[in-house]
Amino acid sequence: LSVGQKRLFRNLKLVKSDYSGHQAKMAFIVEDGHLIWMGSQSKIPKGLKPKDEFDLKGQLVMPSFIECHTHTVFAGSRADEFEMRNQGKSYLEIATSGGGILSTMKKTRSASVKQLLEKTQPLVDGFLAQGVSTLEIKSGYALDLKNEIKLLETIQKLKGPQIISTFLGAHALPPEFKTHSEYLTYLGTKVLPVIRKKKLSNRVDIYIETKFFESGPAQAFLKQAQTLGFQITIHANQLSMSGGAELALELGAQSADHVIHLNEKTIQRYGKSKTVAVLLPAADLYMKCAYPPARQLIDAGATVALATDFNPGTSPTQDLSLVGFLARLEMKMTLAEVFQAYTSGAAKALGIEQSQGDLALGKEANFICTDAELSDFFYSIGNMPRHTLFIRGLAVKI
Ligand SMILES: [Zn+2]
Image: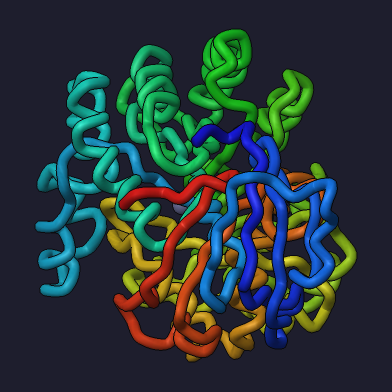
């Protein structure tokens, strides 16, 4: 079978777009990986009927998941730091004893593409096994031109889900630079043009926080990125009201991620904006942070997405069920809102909502089918209900 062939899926229960339930005895036809017909299986147009038919035996069919914020490519491990943190060591003590993000940087700089691929591909497979058809991965653990490019090239070689790479050179200050501003100037003038030219990514991210990359210097850098044609996204307001969330609105960023510390005015502005609020509650659990004001954001009319923020330091989990569970238990999101955040919301965060994020005519046939009910999802931590994943109409073998 190839993506191009026309095929019919029938005898399925199709989840409604607002996740309020499903319609039984439905069918759809996929051609070139896209949905070209959808409807009741008693009304399949004779002229369209293809040779390949798949009886889904009454299973529930829903959009597959989009994981829109991860730091999946890195070398080494930071597992020891978790014990140190729990035993009361401060971040500074951990950093001076050789830990922290710079320890990951050293190991990542010295790893080859082959070594990185060997470590990363099983992690990517771990997302695929949970029904993730599209996965965002950020660079940001090398912090120099040569090795950040190596990370983006590694990301391009990963297999399985559709992968979207994001350049996060502005993740932390590397030892070669004295100030965050100097480093941003280097990234803007020496690194961004190369990434653009080599077509390694069309997205730029930055970690904005007081005493790290501050919103003033960040603004000039992000405008430079936009001028070069990059979409922008911001790690914003995780630890304080650092201005990142407001900058994201001003610049029309694709998303602002974390957004824990928001005042009422900013929440209302998100309600009127296209900038997606990407919420990362697994990181908040690990960091013992407050959870983001999901309920207020949604009630104000904002689009929200959920993601794992998978990374070796502050969110070493790939578990979508944990993320959705926390959104329900701690952030008062409804189950339907969790599904939307992990599908259409995440598609908007990545700017791919024209082709992905829901099952509609003309969109990619990215879906999961399962014998489980909607209520079985995001309920039991560590347990994604058994399902089969289809990407562009082809079943994925896990
Ligand atoms: Zn992150």
